[in-house]
Image (cartoon, rainbow over all chains, first blue to last red; front, side):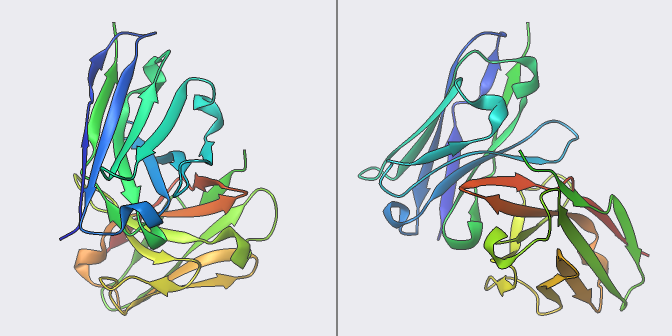
Length: 115
Length: 109
């Protein structure tokens, strides 16, 4: 059974940092691009970032460039999203997505940025 | 970054056919945009139905199909069922980065 389990969400003040983790199992993690997608409360989906199989290439939405970094540990089937200088508008459920055709989605972890 | 446009809402009768479209601010949508279509029901994580324009996952009902139509990506639902009522999002690829459309709320009435 394929599982993507996000963790690390929570309440953080503006300007603070959080690191999200995504634990993958049940599919070939190391041979797939992995992606983070977020959804603000009551809003649509927003693609945030992705990372290539070997971790040497990554892409980000303009609004998080310079603040967020993405990484992965293929030996442990883990992906990370380091979020710095957080803003109110980063408040969202963050989903981990993977495999060909963005087949697999986690259940999401809620990040709330508020003072 | 590019803007991806979708119809905000559509309604289809049970058993009917409806086409949702996905346009790009940069011009015609092509196979290079690797269009994906996702379904999201209230309170649930999204589910990807279509990838790379017209490919289906094993869980995608046969009544859903993806294509390119008139310079846009299209998702056609033939024989709508009540359980198809949901939000549908398209996703397009632009040189390594992806952009979602704003979503279409599909009602089956």
